[in-house]
Image (cartoon, rainbow, N blue to C red; front, side):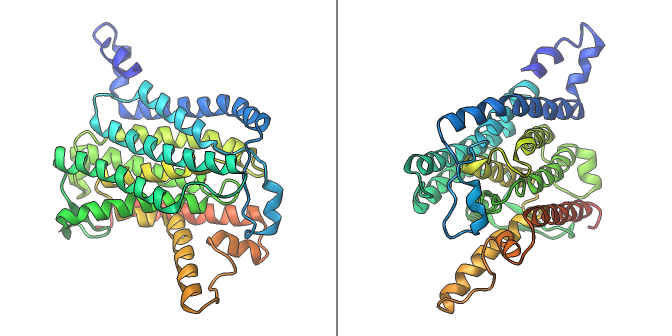
Length: 359
């Protein structure tokens, strides 16, 4: 809105010309999202406390987490509200890639909201049935795929990190692949969101990586120089990513240990899915495995634990999954687990960015 309002005033004064620059709007968008979350979260926390809408802690989880029972949840609602408001203010709303990204964010947020609401209403850790949640996610990603790849004729190719000449065209299988990327990243972030501040910082790292990738992919000279696909109009997604970072920073203010609020499924599912969608749009899907290394490890720990438990009829690989609970039960304090996972996440982000030159 501000972009459309002020950019067309550039003929009146050169000062309005600054609104055409992506980097300027990235900074403004991030700050706007941070301020919105910072200001809106306290009254939301008070409202959730008054209604006694608090976190439901699993009985089979670590016993010391029982003290977190009743802490307000669904903070992701404020994150999503801040992101949407900031996008409307600072992004070019004629860019269809922005609307596709918002579609994924809002659709997965709605699924997460229903799941959180049912858990709160039933007063136990029982939300949407797993099959209903997955079917809804499949449906949403199918719409995303049809719009992006059938209507706008996006290429169904895969670009491999570290290799500039090996490009794979997987054709119609890209629908299944896109489901794996978006649904996988969404649920992996949801699994990671188990300790105060644990998921939100790795998310910011991934969003930071993809803000750079989006900017580069949208700039034809940079894209050609770095041997990555040039995606017209993708530069605007750098602003979207910056806004996500700003909103996440605002949430971290209240989610840092000891947490005053949790994001809930409404936040984790939507933020994770948005990163998967952006990875697909800028054609850097496989790089998400590296940039989001912490999310991958957390998801794999659950898959391995469940698979091994069934195969061996009761034996376990980890003391508890997801992986962060394993280290807690080994005696690591919660803050130590969180900060060390943050460090690993930052290293993963740096490795992902290094692939821009190692090709």
